[in-house]
Length: 431
Image 1 (tube, one colour):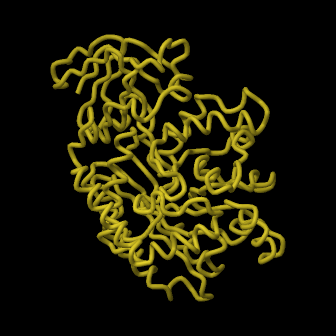
Image 2 (tube, rainbow, N blue to C red; image 1 turned 45 degrees about the vertical axis):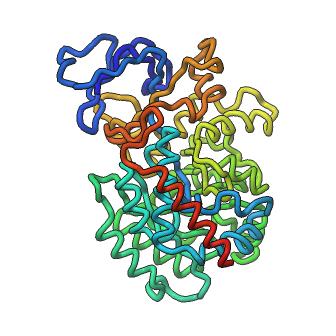
């Protein structure tokens, strides 16, 4: 595909008009102010009038099958939300339930310009199948809750993960990658955490965890571990000695942030979920000032209700101005980088997340002719503060169309909706 005379958000997250962008196979092959010399070789010419191309989005923390729980677990703090609603519901979910719920999540994400997501849940083969069929990419980990004080090898998930890493990691030309998982400090024991960290480090794989989401989580961790915060505890047992994506990180102190900056931990900021569950506001401006890796996620649909990451970008760009009483903190460029390039890097995808020649052709195109886009005084601000996922008219993942003008070429949307609605109704009736 060759995009003609289209505006772009370039690799420096700056706006450029009148560009030509050529996609060959799964790569961005050309970006320039004029048509490439071999323009005819690109095939379809896409008219960029009234359109804006930007890097596609990377959702750094999700629980895709929780589309089944959308609207089910409402108006509850985290621990009641988990114990009274989510865990009983999830206990009734079958592998096929997880498959269809992930199909629907993929459709929703593709609709809103998301091509990759880091997903912590169960039924990993079924989730992988859904992602591959949808044409998206994902880092998948099998959720681990390990209350019993025994080694990781004693848990059935140990053998499951070995099989998943052997059979799923790198499938679909690298679109599926396997991560390891520690759900959280409060749902695991030290031996399991140490074992998983050692295995993941030996295999060169990444780790996905929940970290310091609530004030009570941090306080209870300090009681259990001689005054150590969750960050200090995980550092002390080697968990942070490998590439880690840590979701939430709302209740970090200065020492925590120093440790995470030194270790290169990726912070998956989830502003909508953290507000919805009453967990608080992560100290994102201070993290960015320290040079920490900040990316952006939606979390699951029981604590956000939408995979529209443009809404999360809006929140990230806005709430810290209010919470710090400083209107100059967190720039749109920082928000866009968190939602694209840093999110891709949190998945270990070095060749993704930027509009640059040679990078993977992960792009989304927005229709910017709507009234909310006028005037385009500063288009980068418009993307974060005026744009919405509904403005996306085209999403490419590895150069393939996964959403275009109201159609999903890889997904039977109506069946996915019908399956999820029926399965949610069945599970609720079983509770």
